Image (cartoon, rainbow, N blue to C red; front, side):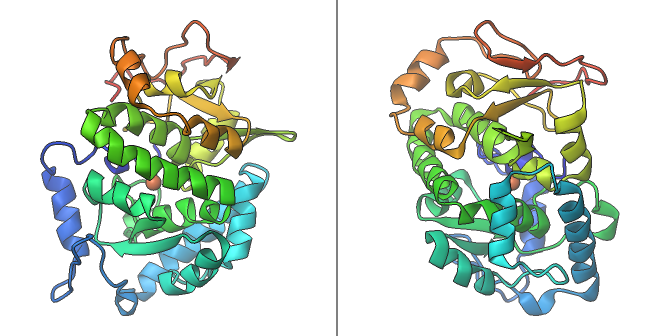
Length: 309
Ligand SMILES: [Fe+2]
């Protein structure tokens, strides 16, 4: 299973807040702490325990080692530029000194998942909301809610890359519009299959850039090496129609050629696209459709029969 799953996709807060997410949010809000109107808090750096730092170190060392030759160069460059501490949970203010200089982005601490509108507002203003808390020792390989390791190790390095940084801002602006057009389901799929579970084609072969993959040991191997999943060329229309998995590894990965391709796809106004796609049926997470640029068709081995989202 992937470390971070669908509860963090935009759309998770549609309707009412689920009890579980509300519980996690409340747990991440320490007593006496001020929750600002934008749902951020001051990162309580003094609250991290030696266990929190040890978990950070263990996950960082494990993922940094296994990602060599698997992750995009842009991610590794971002990680190196940030100079993220591998021994301690990073201080967001320190990360922000480098990040702000590079692309004007900053990381802001939140108690847990924030409502969609708030999330999009942050992205549209180049702020990445990151859970401040660390997972527990028994959650090393899997937890449903995004913790600090997933959010910071998984998402922040690519924000150093100017093109990806622009894409994330454009996504946030798109989210603000989609919310008003009732199109959050379609836009959420784009986030899911790119920011969380995207692969990129390079001269050296396929590489990971999605944070949901690269913060998970198992999916970092599965997404590139397994014959089970489909790997299909990026197509924004196709992705917006494709349901996804929240409880298992993905059945399909979409592959971009460059971050420019990703950013360019967000240039047009999505409103007419939503209209057009709304009239078409959605596709299952493991479907291969006519017109797909298929890199490989999955063997479907080990695929669960449970429902796609
Ligand atoms: Fe994430």
